[in-house]
Length: 371
Image (cartoon, rainbow, N blue to C red; front, side, top):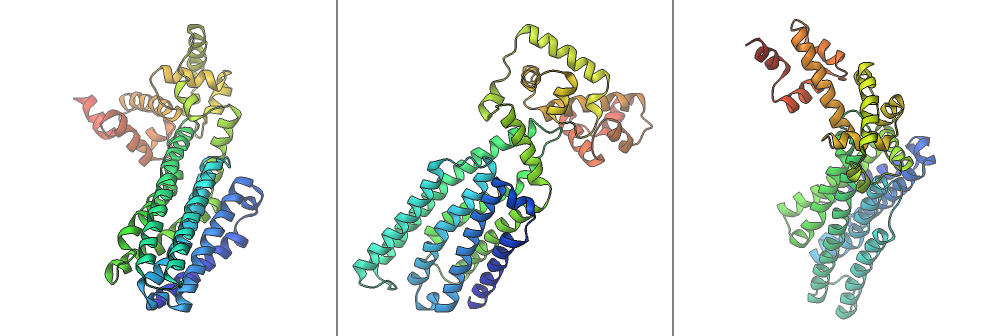
């Protein structure tokens, strides 16, 4: 256990240093990324300090209760900071006051319960019934705090996914994959505490490995998100939604469109399709609306009225319909050529979307046509 604590301390310290000095300059100058970076630094530093204290003073050797007390004092604010860092990205820096308050209250209740138990026991590091009940209470506060953050993160992630699908031509779930996994891992960490804090042997080792892996995955994934192009793609969709005054509610209720507006957009869409605008790669909804000379609001209302939930769903439908025409007219063409001519970025992506929308692979579709 001591070797594991030392390794975790070193790794978390290196991750904290990476967050502070080794990320691209854009992260340090862009306010949303920079705030999330410092929240991640705070959480990572707390974990490193916790492992340092455990390794230096050997609280686990003193007793289970002593080790649990130190864990709770550091893991509660750490989970709060990690949750706020991801929520800050999802909300484009618009954290609500209650989001911060919930974390502060959760940690304050944890400290208060443990301090009261230490006062009643007459010593801080003691294994007493008071301290054990206080640690169970602190574990409950931890779970309630993380339950709030989990609900907030899931809702914000759903809103962000809708925003991305309503901006890009293809589904961009992969941009949010690390956020989804981080939410699951933080929930497992918190909800496992009441059942595993006083365990020993193999259950404790497995739980410790879960904590170690979770912290590493969250921080490393955030670093990759900042270094790569993913954060820029998310920012573009968020900025477009902000410029258009859109929210999750408005994007779902924009399908109200008058008959005259619908006719206007239909004519614009027909002209855009005739010029093969839907077959060009990397066509965002902003680019499509500009090419059609219609506001994004009207274009969004139009395709929602046509029965499509998002821009990416509508464009995928158009491209698959065009691919079906090519397959019927040119059965000798390869799947790669069909995919490229239909506006798909790759053969695999074309195959997956075609199967999803038709229930058949392109090859099966050609066979069906020849029957």
